[in-house]
Length: 491
Image 1: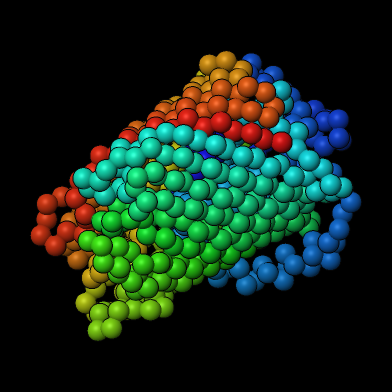
Image 2 (image 1 turned 60 degrees about the vertical axis):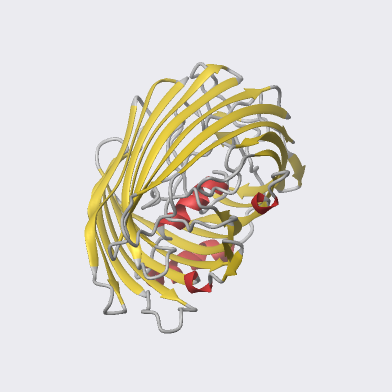
């Protein structure tokens, strides 16, 4: 992830209902004719003339008339992506890609700042936003392994965002590379890449969301639930999404489809290469979300979801880790812009495994987030989630992950932004695999020099503690500090 690249991430369990957030101040027309919400540092309404997309003709009328209705019946049985996939998408994708939803509301992190926003390059209907981040820093444990060695870091991260809009419809794409070199620690060198595209199409009372993404990433031993490997494990994540929101007065129904494919490269343990194909899996998630509008922008929410996980290359002689899951969540969502924004969903999840050696696992789950914005210059956010995830370790079918996070975003000056956060995650492995507890403390200071340049100073401290249980799935204790100063260029 690019340091200082602020994202307003949606819940890791259930993405918010599709649709644009209501602006915090009255919309004002831009010079290019587009109307978009925004605020300056003192809370006044501002035009977002430099947004990703611009106006244009209305192509694709056949799609807008017919596709939502054709998909509606099919999507009623299918649903959203897995929790971990949603988490990764929120971390590595900007909020401008249609089809990958973000939390509503204008915050310090998501506010448009016209005086410092790159204007972009226009090619007819298409708006392009290239960006280049150059970072230099130090990692106290470059491989993420317990007792690992430190190294200087050189980070190069180019990216390109593309978009177009007409009427209420919108399409967008995002491409990025993140090359990180650790001189003296070649095992820690990595290059990550992301490619994503999405569309939002309207037809009467229906809104169709389509999105696809492919990510080539790495997993290291300092992450909760990861393997204790000598070097980061490469993997790819490919996800396809479709959702069709139908408004029926106060009631909105959003059936959705999500298909996610995980593919892993070889790991290295003690200098020996170990195949990780036993972790390769396809996950099909299906369900429907119902929102019933109450007063203002408050709504009662009900989510029903099914999950089918199929491992495509299981180990010979090992029990199958294929599983079927069911989940139900209910609660409320207050999307109004004001002092408080709350989302609270409580429910129950059960996971049944194909192999009789793995007993069915059930338990309570939660997806909750509360944001407090006393003025236009401060946002305080607290989030809590609990869900069932697939495990990386052999002989372990999965684990229950419980996460809590507290974050502060402060606009010290119009061009000086402070971010601080603390997060705690605990993984309780099934089949007596023990527990792991990870903590993350992060702070960053972003200095917006002008429209094209910014400087970000980022510090991140992570710890991982594996309980000393016989046969535990964890890989020991780690303490890791990463400091990075990044100079960003945008057009």
